[in-house]
Every structure is written in structure tokens, then in C-alpha cells.
Image 1: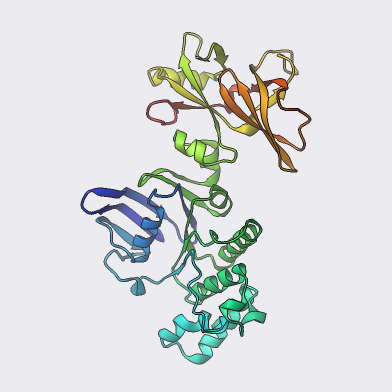
Image 2 (image 1 turned 135 degrees about the vertical axis):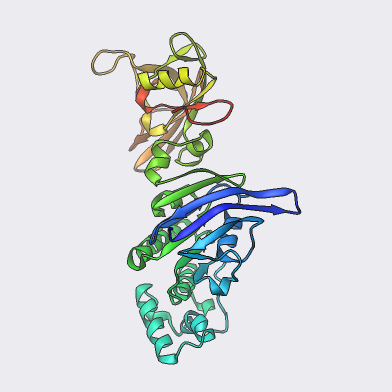
Length: 365
């Protein structure tokens, strides 16, 4: 049994609104699990059930070898960091970190030693006498993390802890959380709607939509082989391009353009009964070219287009083009010497394409 086992957990409100639709997840000791998805997908509800703040309609939760489904939060050996810092404004940093231990009647010398250890880990040593009102947002979040660390729990739970921070501070705190996990090796469940946080923090990711897990795997698996069209478009920035395509005798076509396929993709298309397909391409897999020949003198997939939006970001540039098969976004390194309205061709390799059933959204294996 893993460090955390979620078995067929369902949650229904008012007897008819189904929020969770049979969630099955298991992670091992020390793993960092990310629950990611759009607002309303059920990820925070699932976290509340793991924490014991809410009860499932059916299903079981195991932490280690204990079934904790019916146990109150205080008996689950967990620590939780919320989106709001939830610090006591009348207590200083040291008192906030120590408060949970004080409530559990931990001896004072042990409390003080733990506060010093946690403060050193989170670089809070110089702030122990300050009140929350004297701290920045990032410092307050570190105090909230310190209070959780002082518990030395079996399971850390984070509920969108960086949502209230500005962009620069989010990056800094993301690194802090990653370092914290590397030091403590405590099993962690982290809820976010930010796919960048999911990809950079998680050992494994559960991508959720409408109360169900669309895909559960490592960041590399989810990015390289998305199981559904939703996962493909949700994970990755800019989002994966999708071209509506129809099968023909040669393979696939979109608006009269033949789309290249590998032998494996052709076999998958035949096995699926040749349905209408969403043909997916990551922006970084598209190349901008002026002619119809590659370096070897052979024709690649080519779609003509004109630049409609050019977005330089410094190290790379995002460009959106109007093409016969729809708007396509390309990501290129560095600056792009092009102007809006300029004509160009897009090229890619067939093995870079992802095929999804247009009706079910499932990947064609």
C-alpha cells in the first residue's frame, strides 16, 4: 500500500450534483502529487476529503496503512497550507510556528528547538519576533509553511498556496517549496490550476476535469503523450494547436491539405475505424520556412500562413498565423524578424503530431 491511497472516492452534493466521479490515485512515500485542473473540476474538494474537512459520499482514503476515511482531521497526522495564510495577527512568527505544538502539549524546550530548526530551513531566523502585519506576502507564506513543517506530518497538503502572490514571488516560492520537499522527503499533495506549477513541482500529476481524472502520470508522460485532447490543450503554454482533419484514402486531410502520418499513426487510425480527428501540434514543433523543401531536398508538411500576432518574450517569441486550417501558434527561440501580414510556410515532422478522436477526445494510440 502506498503513502496515500484514494480509492473510488465520489462526492455528491444535494443528492444529485456529482462533484467527484470515482477518483483512484495512489502515490508512494515521499512523492509530490499535483492535482491540477480548471476551476470547478473538484481538486479542492478532493483535497478537503483527504484532509478530513469533508466526507466522501463513497470510497475510502488510506494514509500509509491506516484507513482514515472516518477519522477527524486531528487524527490523520497531516499538515495543511491554505491559499490564505491563516496566521494569528496577534502572535509573532515564532508563536505562529509553535502554536500547533503548544496545543498538543509539546514541552517548551522541544517547541523552541523545532521553531529554530524550521526557521533556519525557511530563512525566517531574523523575523521570529515580527507580527504577520510586518511581513511581506512571501514571508507570510513561509511562516504558514513553517507551522506545517513543525508538525513533522506524514502528509503535507497545499491548497493553491501561491495564488495570492505576484508573478516574481510565485517563481521564488515555487523554488522554496521544491527545495523544502527535497529536504524533508515528506509525501505531499498540492492543488493548483497553474500548469507551470504542476510541471515544475510534481513527481506525478493528476489532471482533473469535471470531477474525474483525465490522466495520471509523470510530467514528462503527460506532456509527451497526453491521454486526451483536454490534457493536450491544458498542459503546455502556449497550448497545443489542434487541426480538424478527416480521413481519406491517403491518410488525413484538412481543408485540402494532406497531413503527414507515421506508419504507427496510420495503423491507429485504421484500428479506430478512421474517425474524424483532432490533429495536434505543439507550438515548438512547428518550423517557419520560406520554401517547400527541407535540407535533404524532400517536401515536408507545409501549410501557408500569414502572421497575425507576434509576441516577443525575450528568450523566445510566440507567433500566431492565419492559415487555411485555422489559427496556428508557433514558438521560436529568440527574436523573430517578421511583420504582421507577412507570408510564410509552416513545416513539421509526422512523428511530432498527436491524434485524438474528434468525438470522444481520446488519444489514438
